[in-house]
Structures are given as structure tokens and as C-alpha cells.
Amino acid sequence: LKENSQNNVVRKLSSYKSNDTLRALIELDKIVMSLYMLDYIDDEEMRKNVCRSLNRGESYHQLRAVIANVSGRKLVGKTETELIINNECARLLALCVIFYNAYLLSKIFDYCREKKMKEECKKIIRLSPVAWQHISLIGQYNFTDEFQSPNLDNVMDQLIQNLSKVT
Image (cartoon, rainbow, N blue to C red; front, side):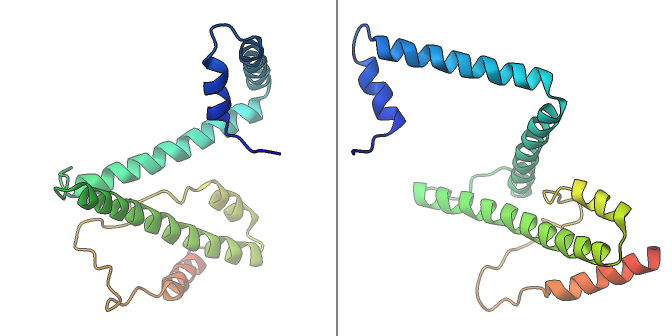
């Protein structure tokens, strides 16, 4: 069997003036969309999940905007390659923030679960790893091997000590 992309199939079907298969696919798409909309209207949990997913995407874009704001929204670079590198560095910073937060939240969750702190576990589950208020984005970033990265286990130990004092 040959493999084909959706784009290629639609392009070939659209090349004819009148195509019953294309019209049938369009009608099928309308049916699928109608069923989805009915499910969306009827199912509150589905609406919450969709909203949560959209908020996650929006939070990521807000983080990227904050990172871009650090440089005054100036495009650093004159060539296409330099602009791509600048964009990928900003993306890397955003992903580093998300990883840092996810790592800490995961370790705190494990600690709370181990100590049978059910209420705290429920709160942690609702937290987003796409937060940056506790991170200073102003400064110079060094992506060389010479720079020693922070020890996240030490940071985690300090957080757990502070959490132990509060509870």
C-alpha cells in the first residue's frame, strides 16, 4: 500500500471542478464537528479540560512574551540564521523555566504524597509549571559548558525544609 498525506489527498480531490468524494468528506467533517460541539455543550468536564488546555497554551505564549520583553522586544540579529538562533534561545529559556518548575513541583508532590498530605497534593496538582514570577529573567545567560548549573536537589531540600516549617 502507498502512503499519502491528507494535504495531498485534498489537493488532488480539489483539482476537479465537481467531486462527489470531496463533497462527501466535507459533509463528514461537518458531522464530526457537530458531534464534537454537542459533546462540548453537554459535557462540563470536557469544557473544563478544553479551557485548561487553552490556558496552558496561553500561559506559554505569555512566558515567551515576557522573555522577549527582557530585550525590549528588539530582534537580535540581522540575518535569518541569527533571528532563528535568537528565537530558539528564547524558546530554550521558556522550556528551562517550565522544566525547573515541573521538577520542583514533582519533587514537592512526591514529598507531600509520602507524608500523606492529601490537601497539599490536590493543590500542587492544580499548579502550572508555566510560572515565572519567582524567576529573575534579567541578566546575562551563559550557555557554555564552563558554567556550573544550579543543583536542583539542593534547591529541593531547601524547599522541603521550608515546607516542613509551615506544616
